[in-house]
Amino acid sequence: MELSRRKAIKSMVAASIAGIFFGDSSRAQAREDSQESMINVMLPRSYSPPLYGKKSIDYQYRLKIAIMDYLQDNYSHSHLPFWKCKLKDIDMEKRMLNIIHWIIQSLKKLESNQYKPDPAWILAQIMKESYFYEFALSGDFAAGICQFIPSTAKYKDMITPDNTDLNKSSLHRPDLADQLQRYRNLLGKVGELESQYSQLFVYDREFLYNLLQAKAQGRDFPAAKEYMQVLTEAKDLREEIKQARKNYRQFLLANYKGKNIFDPADRRFFEQFDQRVLYKAPISAMVNMMSNNLRARHGNILTATAGYNAGLSRTYSSKGQYENYGKFPAMQETTTYVSRILINHHEIAKRM
Image (cartoon, rainbow, N blue to C red):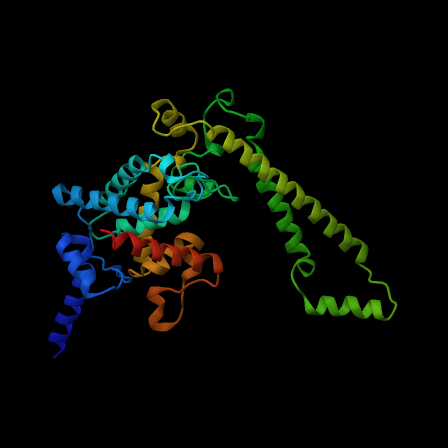
């Protein structure tokens, strides 16, 4: 009885990933039989997409067609997010061919016993991160199609603008190049104030009660003057932080402006200035991070992806049988992030 049950489960799992491996007739039949997404949430360690030979070429072609169809269906008459222009004005097919190529190459470099993320999932993830815009830039200076912040990029051995060896004379607005370090120093100062005077920056019932009680009884609050100075200093520091962020963003955008990563000279510049805006290094880093996250969360693609967005430690669970698979952090941003990727993946997979 147990053997029969296991065979049935294996058959169900095989059917759930059939859309990845088989031809058009099989996919069409699968869609007729079921409207369920082809994603397997608990990715088996044995899963591997076609990486070599004709099957791989066919698979990459179908991936490209699927993502292009998905974009065309939703953005043929509106501006693409991040790009500020319409899809027809972007050579997206060239980008898809290159991005898919580097996803496959990155998967090839993984060891045989490592989890291999579904390429369609990686595409869905990149779509959520940047809509494939190489010069996408976040408020925290995450850049490129995979949106790596400078510290994570450097940890993954990528060259970033704050560790480049390029001569300042080859850069635009070199006077703003030090603003990232200034931004970090200012954040540190605010952090020190918030730690030293935590009652001022975090709701503290007892502190508020004592303050109101002193006021109601007509007594002085001894530290009032000191606290006002601290709050004023924190306010001024936050204004400086805002300006430093704006300055560094200007520095990055000035050096991205007018560049084309498909131009050999511009590509050489970015290899020495900011590898995050290229394809090879960030895609390899994303695939590796997702593989490691899948290992840590025993194949749970959802918590592995949440870990990419919020940090893997935030997906840790100590709840008995659930510990291996992790949990979602209580963060709205991460919940939205994973849900959008899930939808992207479904829409890509059903078009393959």
